[in-house]
Length: 314
Image (tube, rainbow, N blue to C red; front, top):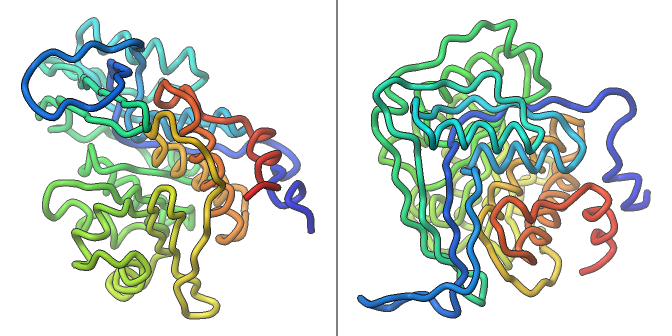
């Protein structure tokens, strides 16, 4: 089977994924090098863009030919309206967004250097996620899969539980979170994609394949994958009872911001479409790598045609 047929979308309607979590107004500054101490840093490019883990994943889904809805929270302020407006313009269904009285919308300042590395200073008002958005089982039934991040754990937990009970893929973005959050959410997830730092923190080892093995032992009910940037991904192959490595394509990194989020969005769409795990991981790895080739956070998310084209390279 050719790579083209593997990564082509299934016939019929576009698959619809619900993304739950972060919605942030990011201010990105491009600098030659990241600062090492106090002083003034002069950027040579900048961009303001609404993104965040769940928001960027939702955008990736749209770019790859799927449908995405976002359940996140913003304050009743100008920043919140800007976030919702920008995400709506990107094609994401924001009808389920919550506007929280008395809370400030999330903002972040990010420096990106010429090697694509970044320094992030985020602010999340604790008041944003104190309540849980009410929803019905019928609302979850309308989606082909759900993807949650760790920013709104109370809502994420209820969405995962509901989706899993219905037999829908319930996917957790296992990024670094406050103590106990991943441990609370993981039992309700059918698939968990860990970032390397989060995996190392929970598994207690710096060896990525060993991380995947230990995490599968701990969360044996779920599909387990650990992403490691340019080093590719390691996932536990349940058929062969072994950890499998998926390399990524070779690129020149310009901006790694949102790469993990693009991976998660691509993976959620692939699983919703019924793609085999090995193919879903490869598909997601290529999408995330392509994103890193351009400055601008989620704005670098590729189209499906671009992913298919690059799937022939190594």
